[in-house]
Image 1 (cartoon, rainbow, N blue to C red):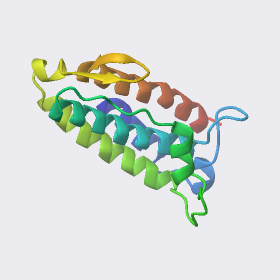
Image 2: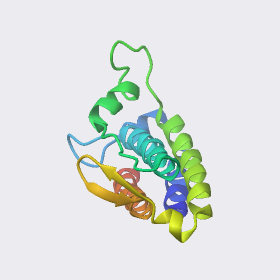
Image 3: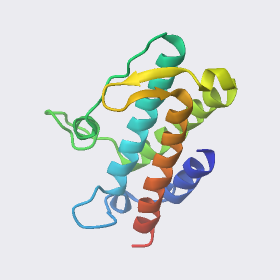
Length: 149
């Protein structure tokens, strides 16, 4: 998680607003939207881990990533502004560091803490941590492709 988030931060640190609007393929999210999505995911899944650790029998709530995107990416629902790519990248790096601080402090028993998801069934905090790491890698590949375009 640390290496991937650091790579994303370094990759995008000097991008212009126009560079954040590039995409890796027609009809796909721009770099800015990918970064917003990654930041929202760090926020949501980090919260899920915290809730599972602090709430016995916790059931996670599903969220619609496209509706979340509309909140911050396009001035959705009549909003005047939108999150910039630079702000999203900085927030991602910071939120990732915050989540990693928690995850690094967990015991093996805490990592095995179970919770339930309405779509995925029984999960553990450890499973969630691995999903978060893989998710970052998946989108890093897209951001690297954008950086070369």
